[in-house]
Image 1: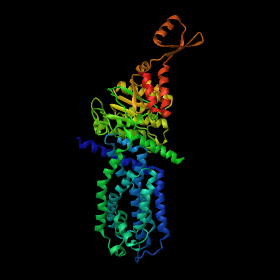
Image 2: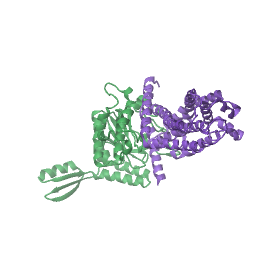
Image 3: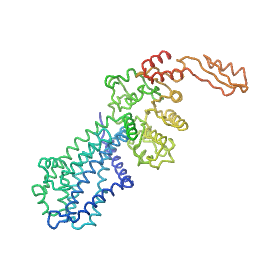
Image 4: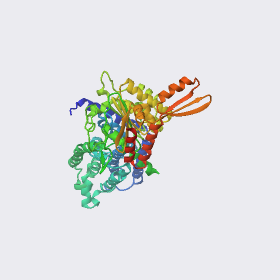
Length: 287
Length: 293
């Protein structure tokens, strides 16, 4: 079967347009604005209540230590759970099937998802970073840290987004995203040194945490915001930048290879009667 | 076609010519949706041969996809989009497949007019009623100006006015655009109105394949003629309605509210549906075959 590159490129272009449109529609929707405000209030509230706690590093305010880790957790949570829910939902409501009926529609759909889910990080970061900067002093120790923030976020995105898309593609129904998406991510947040130092946990738990992207995004974010002296509190007393790049890069490469394959197989099973069945199941469930 | 060790489709054998409107008629559970999904290329069949535009839908490429339109039953997808945006977006995927004789996609303003959604073009789809959504489904199905259009129970939930508009649209697509149309329905009346040819599906096989008129003839029963004359209602059953009408009209100048009713096809189909839904699909199919022989 011969396929010229241009219709595919055309479909990717349309997908990018779709992603941007979905992003604009999301930012304008009160539902999504509410979600951002909610996460911002939770984060800022936590930092405010504990503003006088001891950070463990002399001269470093507690908010400065906690913010990078919280930001990492929110980012990773968002880029795993966001696409997981979206894809699981759009499998059920027929969005995916619609694209299957259109030439190269699935190429367009998934390119759109990639852009849309990536762009979603921006408002999430803005609603937390801007008020934090106004409320607390000494958050960013060195202006050059913003560059580190940029690459850690980009690499974290490449590492975690495929995981979210895989969960969305594999879960049998939207209701199962809680079980197969939320729960594992919550556990990871619990063991990845976000709320307390990872060294306080059992060694095997530390190894589990370090096998997943979240710990490394957290470490990378701390390396961006905190002074070098704070590295002493980390495992092996270092920011381990090379290891961060290696682990996140590894997840990104594996994700880029596996995810399209799985999503293609999943999309091939989409039929009208499946959408119909999902619809009936939901109606039953609500009753 | 087989689910587990249960064959759901055993004898589905038919050809469709270009420009034909073919109706797959059958009671619920007859296998209409399964057949349609195999034709759409969305479902892999366990056995049998199928060629559309010379390709097997299960393995055909995107060029094939561009020539085939599918009307899907939407539910709550794209709630934040407007019809204009969604049709523009989905239509654009067809642009590389346009030809001078068949430019693709369909102009969105014109299409919105065709399905009577112009007034709602910029409203969020999430606020649409069921009927409005169904009209949008049809628009999405034809935005790529398909040469073959496949629809599964397209008029389910339509009110009579919208249903008639839809019938006009199907005739327009087939007459003006030369679109081949394949649709399912469980409504005999609709099949008779729309189709050049009706395939009756029961018990997983095609039990009749004919024009609506031919089908009625095959049942071969009597027609019922009703009319009013001098304020009085008359009913007459006849084997040859045309001959009877000639006689009736030449004898009496005062014939009003004239109706000719082919009760027998309807009766045969009704019996098929009832038996089928009562669980004896095989028996129902066999009896319908005998009646239409």
